[in-house]
Every structure is written in structure tokens, then in C-alpha cells.
Image 1 (spheres, one colour):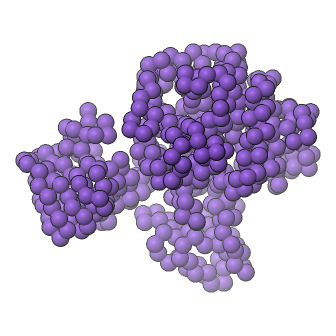
Image 2 (cartoon, helix red, strand yellow):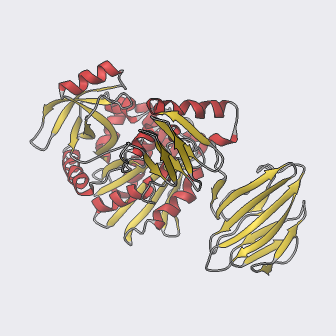
Image 3 (spheres, one colour):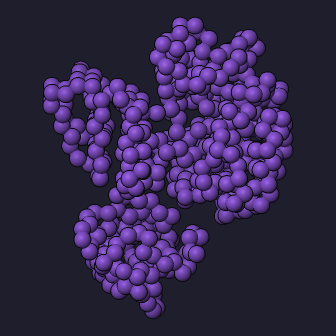
Length: 480
């Protein structure tokens, strides 16, 4: 039995200001309108043959958005969702160990895990499926399989795998060693040798083999993962399987990658040479490569105008961006932040995020549009003592029963029907109608209709922070 295990939640700091802590890289929409996570789900379905189970390991904070992506992708009815929720990030080894232990309970040691990061782009699905078939066969023989990507340039942003003796004619070989991201002269030597492949971060192994090798090479990590899983029961939540890992137990696990914890130590590791296209979309340069260039090698995602400009990439979200007399630039425009960087410094965008995080600037964490389990809100304007939001509530969804100490709210319904609790009995508020929520009043907003509820909220008060909220009841488990 093959089970895709998708690891989702990497921050993607080199893709700021689009990728942020509250809206990480897997949720980014590519130029074709589809997210990286959605594309990963489609690849998983392709290798399953439209029947089976897909495991997604993600952070608890991303659960509702991830679940929405799964169902919005429109996978076959025979593909079931299984979510494992981490309370905090602990790198790939704890995530993969947790998934393996959960799968052992459901499917036994012979189940084959196909580990797939959610933020990779692979367009040749048929070639990918062929590589997975080869990897599955080797995994069934007791190997730990990694996928190596044929290096096409001296890339310094990837780790490498040195291939050893071949196992067969399909391009599978023993792994001599894993090496860290090299400097440019070393990467050039790797490329010239023909023996080094980019480390894709994708793996395939039988559950039993993986757990045996963890017991041998990382026994403490495995014991801690077993203790955590023992306290984290699997539940059925509607049409999905849900396993929320206990925070105190999971925090005991080390922050370590599967490469360091196991793959570099085991003698059972082999590499399948991937015959498919692959990109980790690790920088704005990589995303720009997905777009057709003009005669001057300029690329645009969104509304852009290039005048006497060369080799420039522009991404615009809703506004026209014009460049005049520039070259080798990256320009990314969002509602609340603009990035301008030299092409050669694309990898250094992460330093912007670090600076923002060190200063506790909100732009490292959230966009103006923020996803919530019930829908989303967008901050349209704010100033001293006021904030204006556009709120969208999905059909059948409901905000928590809550209260604010420091702000009052005025709601104007633009579309749909709102069911409002405002200190008393619920009432319906239709389009072009409004209601006022004084500070200190218990209130709740619900969408009882079949279309999105859209409303404008005007907040006023001495303090308008998102933490001025007391939840009394919440269907998403956020009430204290």
C-alpha cells in the first residue's frame, strides 16, 4: 500500500513579501492560479490511482486552510484526507517519524510512505509517477530511497547527493554521501564530475524499515515520538482523519532533519535518479523562470510595464508596476509591502524577514488579508482610534461568541445574510442593513446562507489590536 505523506508549512522566507508566517509558501498562488499545495495534492492523487489515503503533516495553525485546500482541489471521492497537526515546528525527522508511527497503527509495517514536501513544483506527472514506481519497488526490498535531481547548473542553494555504485538500469544507485550546500567552486566541481545530484528532499520507504533504522540510529527520537503518538489519539472529524499531537510531548522531540537524523547514517540508503522536471521555487528567480520572457528577458506576474528595462522580474497584486531604465531587478508589490532586490541577491531576501522578526514588525507574520477557519478578513484602512475591515464568512461558518474590552464595531452587510447575536437573541441582518456592537457586548456572527457573507466592519476605540478578544464559545477550538 502506497501512502503519500505531505510535509506542509515551510515559511519560505526567500519569497517574502508574498510568503509570510501566517500564509506560508505552500499556499502561494502560482501564475496559473493554483497553489503549490494544491498541485502537490494532485500529484499524490496521480500516484494513488484515485483511491487511497493522503497524510498531511502541518502546523495546527494551518489546519483549516490546509483542509480547505484539500477539498477545493477536487480530488476523487476515493482519496481520503488524514491530517497530523504539529503544535510547533520540529523539522522533518519528528514529522516523518510521527507519520510512520501513525501509519503503522493503521496499515502495518509493509505500507510504503512517499514523503513529499508541499512546496515543490513538478509538471511532468507521468515521469514523476514512473520514478515513484521504481522507488516503491526498492522500498519494498528494504531500502531507504531518496530522489536525486540531475544537476544542470552549479547551484549553491541546494544540498547534494553523491551517487555510488548503480543498482539497476533504471538509474537507481547506492548513496556514497550527502553534502551540504557548497560554495560556487565546489558546486562547479560537483557539476563537472557528473556524480552529484541535487537533494530533492523527497523520500520513499516502508514503514517498518524506517522505524527499524530510526531505532538503530536515532533511538531517543523514536522513543519520544512513540510517547507523543501514544498520547495523541486518531479521531474522525467528519470525512477526515485528524491527529493533533500533544504539545508538551512533541516539544521534547529534537529539531532535526531526517537527513541528519537518519539518511546520512544508514547503510540502506539508495537514490532514484529523477527523470522529471523539478523546482523547489526557492526564490523569486525560480518563480520568474515559470513565466515567458519578453524580448529583453523581462518577466511579469500581474500588471507591469517595462520601459528600457532588461532582465527584470515584476510581481504585482492589483496595481500597475512600471520600471524605467533598470536591469537585473526583482520587484514584488503587495498591499502592504514592496520588495526591490538585485537578481543576484535573491537568496538574501530572508535577511529582510529576519530583520522584521527581530523588530517584531507585523509584516513578517501577516498580510492585510488574513485567513481564518470561518473565512477571511482584509484590513482596508486604519488610523488612530479606527480600523476598517472587509470580512468574508463562508456558508455555514460562524465566528466565535466573543467580546472586546476596548473597541466597538459597526457592521454593514454587503452581500448575503448575517445571523447576528448582539448581547441578546439572534437576528438576521440582510444586504444594505447594519448593526452596532458596543464594547463589552457578547456577540457572534454567522452565515446561515449558501453564498459568501461579505460585510464591512468599522472598529473604533482606544485599542484595536487583534488580541483584544475574549472567546466564550468557538466551534474551531479556540476558546480558552
